[in-house]
Length: 163
Length: 163
Ligand code: SF4
Image (cartoon, rainbow over all chains, first blue to last red; front, side, top):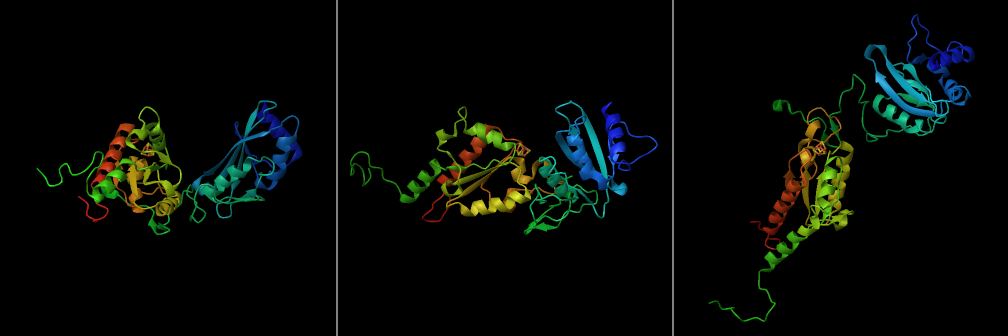
């Protein structure tokens, strides 16, 4: 179905872009980040695929295994959908931005940047979107430590005795 | 009986200026709309026709310059805390603050683990009345407002002595 079709198209057009394994997952497609910008444009523009709607970008912190960025696409034309997963390095998290391919990606990518500190290369306005601009750290990472104070306000007022 | 009896024409009221001032203040504390989260819905319901806040002399104002009471309705995030302080400083004296709901009072559901939530708005601004509840019903809010009006009524602004 659409999953096999996308796999086939990507193998033909971008050899080496898919993270191949013995048992390919049946509900998403893992790819390497190097080819991502071209693949994204291809997914949107290919008349058979035509993923014209980017529905969500999520970051996932998998602990030891690094971090994931997951994209959900839907096609308004063909009414099919697909999930793409890209692993990023925890120490140097950086992947190409698709903000100029799907405009909605602008805020999605800023949110992932805000929570995980993943840099979207080529994004034209990569700032924090929810937290204050001068916040320290990336809150949804597993190893996140809350900062002590924020503009003189103590951040976690420990209320252990309440338990 | 008294010396002053029947010494004045009709429609003249004799009272201490101090008392009249606080009476006038207490009957028209205009409130600053400050809906921050789900509690704001109850605040809106309180202002709407069924509970009708204008019958106790309160009308919503959208500018801190025109407001006497700030009703902090909802979760105060760290980002918002700085702005609350700024808005409070912009209000003209005499000014009062009502902390509406558990969130504004103590952090509410985020009282222990929310890294981004201020654990009580009284950390940044002085609070006059706390209204408990999650969210408080309009009746509770109105009770809080009436309590505040009592408090203002008992103030003696000229002699600086509060009863
Ligand atoms: S106290 Fe409850 S209803 Fe009010 S803002 Fe907090 S969570 Fe929402």
